Image (tube, rainbow, N blue to C red; front, side, top):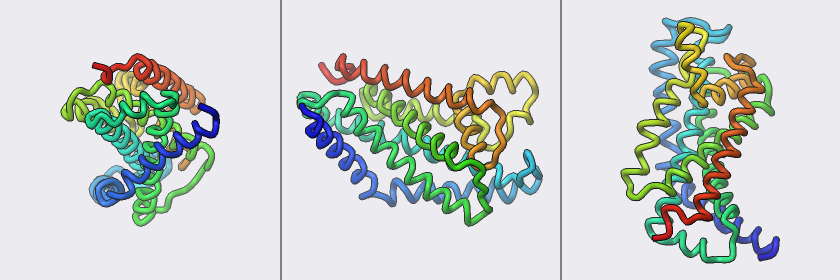
Length: 257
């Protein structure tokens, strides 16, 4: 297949993925906005008034980057894992795999859909956050790049989960028992410096901590980890997961009987 044919194939998969979540925006875009509003009401106003300032920012402002990124992570992951598993369950994915389309293009199409949903939810959640507190912007390029890279990373995670999943129960195992705990313990609602020394070191093993702090640096200019280390961790995970997912597709893992 020539370059034009590959572009058409990629665009077709991407458009299908984007239309998939935009057609049901009440189920994909609206719930994160409502959830974020509840977080601000409960943690921002009620609990935040008792905590005070964190790194020179009001607590409600301090949790904004984490809440935005948490919504992006959850929705990027959910979009790809549900879409790819549905295609596998309905055997639509077999039509893509037997077509003269490279597997990496199929992956990029699904990842693009996860990225589109993640960024759409991120923008929607940011609008909700602005209704509760002003959002400063310290470094635009850091904020945008971390948002995109994080969405790509968890889109890949969702793809790998979908490849291995054998039923709908398997789709929810990783988000429930892995993704949610890591997100809540990733510094969304607190600064790592507030923890005892032992738990500070334990927190450094959580990859989401680096993403949250890098994005917080982009918005607020404060971070608990070195920015370069955060970028290195995110990009390293993307390369590793992309290579692993491509290996699984080429091998036909979870697809070929």
